Image (cartoon, rainbow, N blue to C red):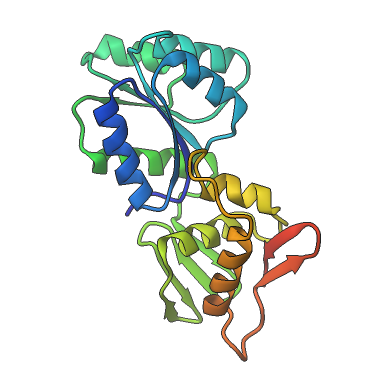
Length: 227
């Protein structure tokens, strides 16, 4: 598990590869949406703010490079990892020149894809160090480990994802809608009280009795993590 929690879009016409990537990334706690052609992928990439996009080079409807050029032309700067079956320096140079942030040739190992996504995400958030510190909390996004004052805290994948979302924006109030957008995919559809329940569960673990609170509720606004 080497990738910071993200909301991802995978644009890929191969159902088998979509399924493989979806299962692998979801196991790591990421919210993943899918498009099976360039037309739908283009629309989704414009409508939703994703942390990163995995974009196939050759697809029906609209070529991956055409989609990418349109996004960059219109100011959409979402990090894009371009996938292609075409191996060659000229092809890679063309993809990077059209605005791709990284390039991966098929076939590839899932471990390599997630490592590259990790690098793109850290670069975007200007966080080369995988460790996030908020007061007594230390969150290691690479090891998926959390500790408070040196004491290890065991979290579920969903709880870790929630904590990381808050920790990447310390002192910033996040609404339930913002949290849902990062925790759940378009197809998953959370229950009405899912975020509140997840916050309660996380709060019990990171703020045990007798310790100063770290997760605060801003009535009518949302939640904030601050020491």
